[in-house]
Image (cartoon, rainbow, N blue to C red; front, side, top):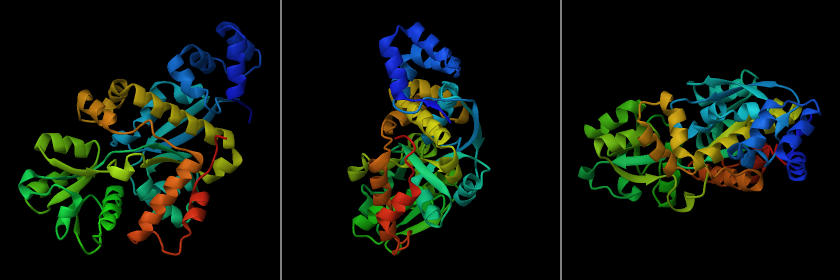
Length: 353
């Protein structure tokens, strides 16, 4: 499939007045409305010129996402702002509420073409062989660990010998804080107790003293902290993790192999969306507001606290995947015999270069 790439658009825009540049591309027989939008809208154009731009024909794709998680905000932003359409994609959004294994199976088997999820939840099932390729990271931040002032807990190490509430034992936040506990010299499997509650019941469990703290992602975690005056002990942007992504885009392996341009287009669309979120968090919060009970002002604060400008690809992303894989091996989530570098090579696909 033919695409308009960076050199094509940059060359046309530099050599000709904007209107004439558009007319030149019109004459090529390729789609025009989305291209005109990109050339005349600097908010879209700046990001779009970084890679593959417009597919030669309208391409339908199904994209799964979790509409209750604000870290997936780039998905409705890309739809609302016309970024999918700008790449000549006709994207059907599927709000997926099943297990991670079911989600990855849906992508691998063609029931969906791509999905957004958490690296620390995806890497274990990807190790088991699902034909899904990570093509980009999306952002960093959104996992938080809370307690109350009454517990006297002020740092993660203070949870040794205590109980932490989680939404499930395979949750990405449970995996993340297990990794950090391990680095502090506390065995996360024996040095703390993990107790499972429904996500919306975690604050209740803390208030009843059934747990000393709980971990939860945004927006539920942020809402509980503000409502209940909780103490945020740690989050996944602390220390060495300040520049580590947590959310990724996975694309069906057969799509990467058979229609690499479409895989590139969906990847680039979401990269542009993340840049837009980073530049305009208030507007992004307004787009996400229909999916959340939190007010726009609170959603905006969440987005500003996250790193939507951090979405590595290529060697940088493979390095982050390898780091997470090594860390998950240390807490006995990933098999000890798994070769970290080979695993990162296998699950990552470079569709943009």
